Image 1 (cartoon, rainbow, N blue to C red):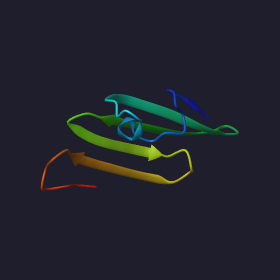
Image 2 (tube, one colour):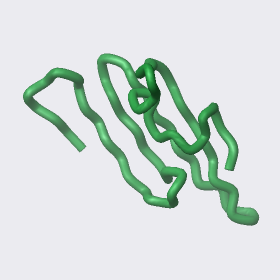
Image 3 (cartoon, rainbow, N blue to C red):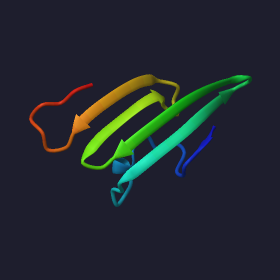
Image 4 (cartoon, rainbow, N blue to C red):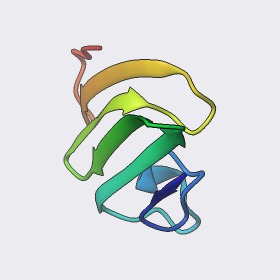
Length: 69
């Protein structure tokens, strides 16, 4: 697995202290590559395979009563 540090963290919001910006990683399984990208800011989203192998996507607007995923 490789990507932006820390590689095993899914969202930069989870860091202490929380950070903003882009995060990406790629899980290598032989010839297969499983991508992951996330963004933390006013909008929070991710899409792809997380470090634990779970595939998902999420889109939220912070401090909004309406949430999507």
